[in-house]
Image 1 (cartoon, rainbow, N blue to C red):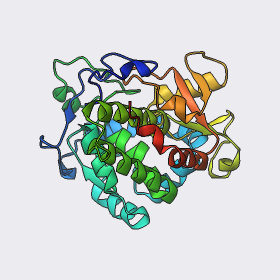
Image 2: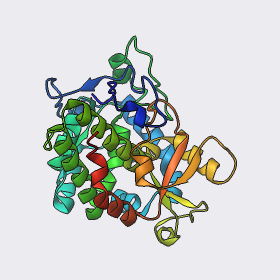
Image 3: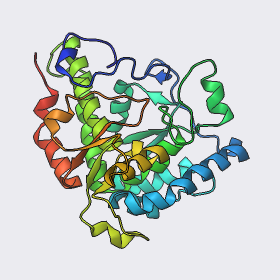
Length: 310
């Protein structure tokens, strides 16, 4: 696990102790696959989905990136009930070669990157605020609110991540990250366990500040796909923001000068890979890419940053 301390941790900034304390994590040795039982979804769970979706719909229409908006339009992701994995997966596979892999919950890095390297995206069918979620974390104190939870639930996985997989450039970017993660974990360069863990943390940092909590400059070109024009300097592409009403509102308020909770920082891949993060709070910073294409180019041109040799 990348949360384990290594002798190279002092190289990082923004180190957060116990960042994922309490979250159940599944690996290869666990029973991690869990086919969706769509017929067992309760009315209460469907209502939670609807409330989450409707609460965010207008905000995302105004502030999410073009890749997200077009992906949502092309997939059968309903606003009033749970999505059905079997209805969505074939469409993604036909578009970009990816498919959905139903799983028990949060996966460790080794398993996650291995699946991504095979163009499989893990999704879970549990949702925040539900009886099943509360039972899963009975006796464990983790944040479980409508606006945010550190546990990736179906709303985060499907409503926030999956639409992007309909975009070929984005899907290839995710695939390339999966391949790189798999290469680091299997220690293809023979660096040893300490450096494998350190380099994996670098990739984890990059993933966090990009496809989980990334923003990109707003050029106005996406407004033709919106009902209301974007009135801030940024578009949101990070799924951790998109699935969280609280995080999305925080972005908007900070961008409009109504809050100073978070900073917007020009994207610098060398800084990003060395900056740790916290699962349990709204982020205190967001790295702003010039464009999605610039993000992809930066990653492809700087893969040496993920092969630190000590």
